[in-house]
Structure formats: C-alpha cells, structure tokens
Amino acid sequence: MDGKIARPERVLMAFEWCPSDVMPKNNVLELELDIPTDGRRVTLYREVLHTRGAADNTTDKPFYYYQCHEKESGKGVVSLFNQKSPKEGHHFESLDNVPINDLALISLTKLLENSTISPESAPLYKVRRHLMETIAQWRFYNANYMNLTKILNSEPKIGGQEALLSASGENLSLILFNLSNQTIDFEETINQAMKTILPTTRRVRAIPSGRLGLTIEWYFEGIEEPFYLNEMSDGAVRMLCWAIILNSPRLPPLLVIDEPELGLHVAWMNTLAAWIKKAARKTQVIVTTHSPDLLDHFTDHLENVLCFCREKDHFAPKQLSRQRLSKALEEGWQLGDLYRVGDPDIGGWPW
Image (cartoon, rainbow, N blue to C red; front, side):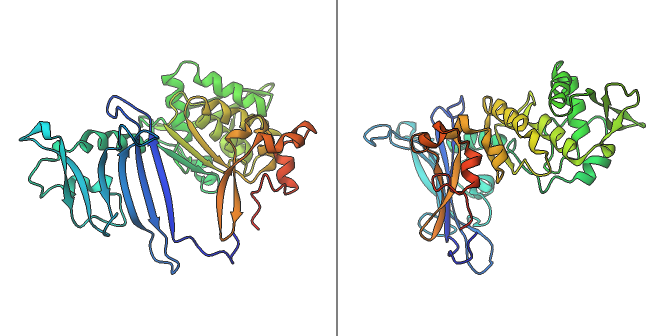
C-alpha cells in the first residue's frame, strides 16, 4: 500500500442472497464501516437489510427490514407487522442503544426486548435466523494463518461432527475421516487429487491413533510403511488442505481463500487452479493472490478476475476486459505474463 495515499474514511460492503423459501426476493445486507485514521476501532456507520427493488424503481420498491445508524449513530428502526390491523401491513418501530461495534442483525432480539410487539411480529425474524445460519457456514482461509505445526502434530478426537476445515487447519485428520465415512467416493477423490501432485501416491487416509485420536497415513508405491504428515513436506500438507477444502462434498455457501499459493511448488499451480474452478461451479469462491503463476491458469476465465488499481487517492477493484486484452491474448500472453511486466490493464501493483 502506498503510504502517501490517505486511508479511506468509509468502506461500503453489500452482501446479496438469492431467493429462498424464507426470503422470496433477493435480499441485500449493506454495511458501511467508518475507518478512523487515529488507530481507534472500526465502527458501523450504516447497516441496512432490504430487498432489491426493480431496476427502474417504478414497481416493486425495496422493502426495508431494518435500518441502523443511517440518520443518527446508535439509533435505528425495524419493520413490524401491525397485529391489530394486518391489512395495514407494517410500520417502523424505533431502536435505541444500537451497538456501533457489532451487527444489529446479531443483537436484534435484545434490542426488541422492551418492544410492545413481540419479535416474532418482525418480518426480519425468520430472515434473521436464515441469514445467521448461512453466515455461520462461511469459511475464510489465509495461508499465512494456517498453523502447520498444529496440523502436523495434532491428533483430534474421534467423534467430532465437523465437516469443514478450521481456519488453522488443525482438525485436518478429523475432516478427512468424517467426509470419507459420510461420502463413499471422497477418499478416492482425495487420493486422485494427491496423485496429480505426487504421482506415486497410493493412498491417503485418516485412521484412529491410540484410544481416541486420529492421524493421517500417506502411502506411496513401492513402500510398505506409510508416511505421516510430520514426515511430509510443508507444501504437500498445504495441498492436502486445499484438496480437502475445494473438493469437499459439503462446500460452504461462501469460501474465501487468501494467497493459497504460499509455500507451494510452481508446478502445482495448474492443479490448484483446477480445484478452485471445480469448487466455483458449486458455490461462491473468492481467491486473492499475488502469484502470476496461479493467475496464468485463469486466463480462460479472465472475466471473473478483478484487480486493484489506483484511482487518484485510493485503490479500487476493476474487472478485467477481454476486449482490451485481446491483442495480447492473440499474441500468446497469459494473465500472469501481463501481471509480471506491469501491464496497466492488469494493474495490481502497489504503486
């Protein structure tokens, strides 16, 4: 980041959910964060949940479940049904003492404790539960924060019901054990995945260790005795983590991975990219990277690639244009090649 560029005062984020039984229309949660320049805590400047209305704004106007901090910090309103006169639809009821460091979506039940109308009367009531259950399933992974020491030496207990790898990765053997038992083809999927990076791989499996623990055995052709994770290279263990995350039969509704290329051999980038593309056909996947070697393998999907470019006093994401890059692509350039030489249509450089 360029230290000469002023820190942004506010950041706006919007999350949109597709229609479901609970939410018949597209619902949007907008969060506007106030980011101070003096090191104080980030606070909520605005928080709104509404339905997305028609593009022309003439029909089907947005319905607002709740709005907080919009007119006054710590204040808000929530839509409630009119129980005595249902035909009158709904009305807004004021909310006081709304926290500015936590989502009102989380604390809404407490905020409505003193309301004369029960929380069940709020259209938000069922929607809130649906959103919180969905958000709780989101997974965020950062290769820098995955604790290889714990992954290599951890022996999680048999019996845990988790199906998603933790952010640190230390429940790796438990997840492999659970998914292999729950889905008949999963162990074979992982075996084939590992063969793409280490062709002599014969079998990778999670087995009981001691009385209650679990460990992972890695078998190779021509070698009878298995290898254990603490005998494998860090890169191979990292790839096993990404294989289990990206090939899981129980993918989270949102999967975010920061710099998955860290610690990996460059020859494995094609395999990693293939796993990412496979997962992205089933769920929402967001990957951030500084690796031109990984970026090369997304040339065929460049419309789905965003780069951060400097715009006067800030950086902003920009979608790549196949039309603008057509000449370079016809000459045989890949996205990573253009990134390496600092092509202005790719951006991503910290100056």
